[in-house]
Length: 397
Image 1 (tube, rainbow, N blue to C red):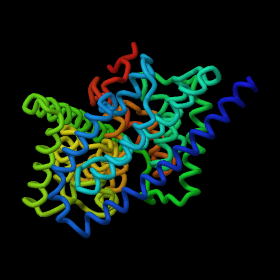
Image 2: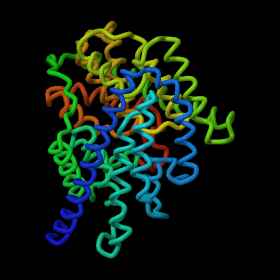
Image 3: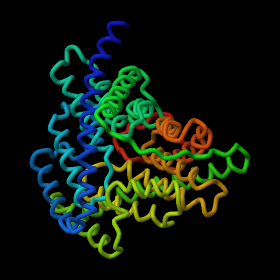
Image 4: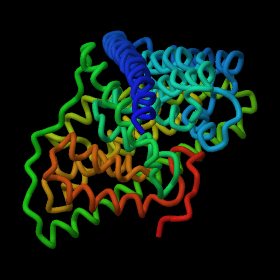
């Protein structure tokens, strides 16, 4: 056991350091690109052409990498080929360009893919020593999630829980925990600052408030279900209408540009962190969550890179904000519940999201978050963001 612990500790530290450094460079690049776009908004006009360039590059040099996170999950469940190291720089550059020119995408997809691609090189070059490739990839996913969101405990469980719908792979807990903590610590040490939402006043539990949290959770689950359906619908539609994959982002980019100039706002583009922050403090537009669903479905469905989790945080917090008009719970509490519950329903990772809620908003939110997350998980359906999640025997009710 000591020998195994030593072996996995060494490789977990190496993976964590690489993941943390990559996340630091990636987040800084994203922040610079978003700042530039906000001060030079004319650059949005070039989004369709940048989308074509990204699609051409992937079609020419990384066709097998197009499925992103699903490729990682497929390799864990059914190992075929090692993930090429070029996945890391390709997703880095394409995600930064997507943000620079205004696509509505996230950042976790890039971080997870970069970390997994780097961690898989250990099994490629040192296969005789690190023979459990599944655990190596899970460590990369945990370290990437942890370092990009600043949540080492939730990152640990995410890397274990995201693989199988309805199950957690506990054999990887120790190496995933070490990689997650090291990734987070490395990013923090290099100078990353993470967003804080709070403090949130948590009311005492009553029967009415429990019912309200459950009703909110149902709404969050249905929103997650609608988001997943929208992404798949847009992806299938544009695939049928545009046979050549290189030109699909062009049409998605045209839609984003038209919406930007038609509505005169960029609040549904990029990460939308300022809107997420505002949803915890003040009333935002009740239709903000629908605007983000629409823009993200078009951006992701047409082929822009980055991920969907930040969009889910945006959708959840603004939907919770809107629910405060009709439910007798405080605006910050509903925004916090939506923040984690929509993500839980869409990614099928309720345990990781419960831990994330307590890390971001304090342990006092635990019961409310558990109720909302469980209801969201149940009502979001059997599908999810990652179609390669194995369907475990313990299916949803």
